[in-house]
Each structure stands twice: as structure tokens, then as C-alpha cells.
Image 1 (cartoon, helix red, strand yellow):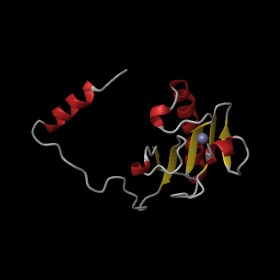
Image 2 (cartoon, helix red, strand yellow):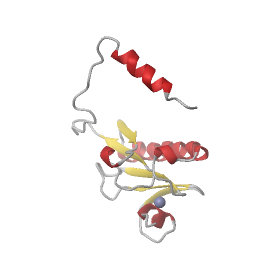
Image 3 (cartoon, helix red, strand yellow):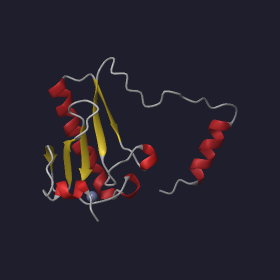
Length: 137
Ligand SMILES: [Zn+2]
């Protein structure tokens, strides 16, 4: 398996590393939406959010909060986005789970959902029922 993020974890590929613990690494995205756009990854390989081991959740989120605080302080941010692309159709390009932390600025015109839909009639309840049937804690 050839994974660029695993190579970065192994220090076999260069990266601008911002923060690192025994199981988590944060680095700058090489193609940033805004400068300072950071990625937080688990050191052990997993493809996406669905395969992220539960024992990694806390450490990933903790590292994301630590790095986000640093971005806010460094760039004097009023806001930022935290997100994860899962699957090629959702924009995932490296198939090793990662969270993005993206600085936001007034007037930057970045929009995640340009066309919001509206539920009508019972469709919200029906969607809720369908999803609840598949909830498997
Ligand atoms: Zn990997």
C-alpha cells in the first residue's frame, strides 16, 4: 500500500508538521484553501471516518482543537471550518482519514451548500425514520 500520509508519518515524505503526539499528526495542507489550512490525521492508517478506530476519536478531536486555537491566534481569525471529505464523490483525494481545519475570512465567498433544500409534508419525519432504522450504536 502506498499512502502519502503514512509516508509522512514515517518521515519518509516531507511535510510542514504543526503538532504531533504518539498517535496523531497535524500538518499544513500543501494545496490550501487559505494559508494555514491544516490537516489532522491518525498515525495508523484508516481509509475514512467510518473506519476510524473509536479509541482515536478523542485524540483526533483534541489535536484539532489545539491546532484550531493556534490558527485563530496566528491569523487572528473570526472563524474556521472543520470538516472531513469521505469518498471520492465527496472530494476525498487521499484515502487516509483526515480532518481539515480551514481559516475563514469575511468576504471569502466559500460556500459549502449553494442550494439548500426544503423538507415538505412528512418528508423530514420519513427521512428521520429511515435513518433511525439504520442507527447501530
Ligand atoms: Zn495511510
